Length: 289
Image (cartoon, rainbow, N blue to C red; front, side, top):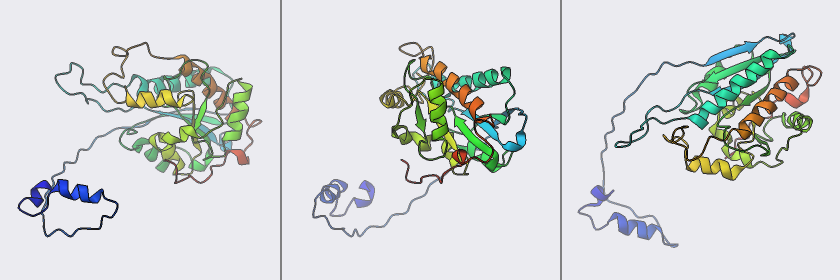
């Protein structure tokens, strides 16, 4: 705009001052401009990784756990020594929790329902892996009775209450509350965590009518989570070697215990019978922040 207005009676500063006045009315500018932009397309071949624990009654549906494995590569700027945009919290911690939940469920009694474990790609570029899974799933999406996303869960200390990212957007809340009571953990009864609903893979699944939430201590202390987003998030400092203090794993351990309990609960036909109303997805709320 500065270049376009050169030689006219207007300047960008003058126009911005006019626009700030309460009585501002549109101003016609007798200028024309021609712009040219060049773009470059890059094709990346990448994959989701899917594992399954077979259940005794696979026809009754499945439970899904997921965490994204992708990140950004280099994002630091010279002359910094470390240019790699690390992801110890986002989302190596989520993948570690996903792996441990799988290990615990595999060592227990066989469940009625199948349990799928999905490591998604392309989350950071727009939830692409989650969308790809939902558009070409290994089972009909309607058979997924509950999906639990795990993302950046090494944030909160032990004893932090759990929050549901996606609270009120599915029919899962009542059953999750039963598991929380059985596990003797506190569950926040507010929707504060929904502030981040659109920024994780569960949102993509909801768009395909798959009931998906995050159940985690990480969002149980929303101010702590916001501090992470304002600090190490997507920076080289999201790395064990660069953190000012040791990685907080207290809440992550409790997340694993709770998620394992959720897997056993939703995988059990006695707890959640086939076709029961509580697990049906409600329409995704398009007004979520």
